[in-house]
Length: 219
Length: 219
Image (cartoon, rainbow over all chains, first blue to last red; front, side):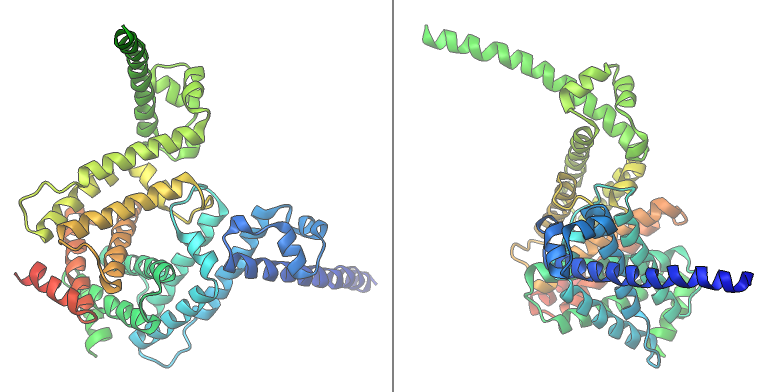
């Protein structure tokens, strides 16, 4: 009896929750689409409502305002990027890196305006959720690369090398969006070669990296 | 007679302006000192007033609020950094780069908390003055390096390589402030070697960089 009641109590909110979640996701998807193609300042709550076939009031109901909607869209974009960067397995680490980089640039290209707007400049709201989401993506990229290289506890030389390379990739993505005067495939090759070159430089400063570089690059 | 009058008119405002400017600079210097050692959220207008021996009202009079004061302090820090990065002349380009890097890290160390807080994460206020100041510093660093290398109109491969290296230096600075588990001098050597390695990689993609790399690295 108690169990039945509990099941009933649980079932109804769950059904309602599902449709609430779906509506919310539709709004986030519409927002992400707009924020990907335009500077955030040029996207209004009305644009999002129109694009999702919802009322302005509904968007406010779910998100409270544009900042929350932007943060939700950014979080959803970060999850999408991380899902795409999961290794497909099977290749050698440097091959996996090249494939991951191709998927990273697919993402950059699809979300061009939003990516550029987000990463240009420095953070004004330094304690904000936006900075945390961006940092979270960088941290998880670092861990994906470390996993692929079978490194669990990198020393300072390897850690700063990998973080620097991730920053290089971000900057190269921004530069490419600004100029588009280079083939994407060539830029991707350049960045993979940069990783190899940076590992060789790091190998001269740290024995552990020296062994790793041998396995990754000469094996 | 007209000229005398003009001179008098001009002289008085100039005297007053000088002391206004000096007071304003003192407030900025006090603010920069505090923003360099603490997260911006932990610095109040009262702290700045106290540190500069001024009244809270005077700070508001000159700056209107904390955001304007922060922007003014950041602009002053950017000018200071750029002044320090001016080449002292005399050395070969890669030696000048190493010296510039040392002065960059002097600056990073002196402004530790402010530097870390500024560059962590992504910009929330993307159209904001803060992002523009940060981007301006990066742009001027790019031009300083190009001048040193006697490059005026870099192709895409060199441009993205140099911008990526600047991003690497920034990230390495942040990483070093977070961990401090590496000698600064060693990190600086690592970054100079990274530049050389990145130029060699770029040389494989672009004939112009190939000639440049030969001059810079083997000459």
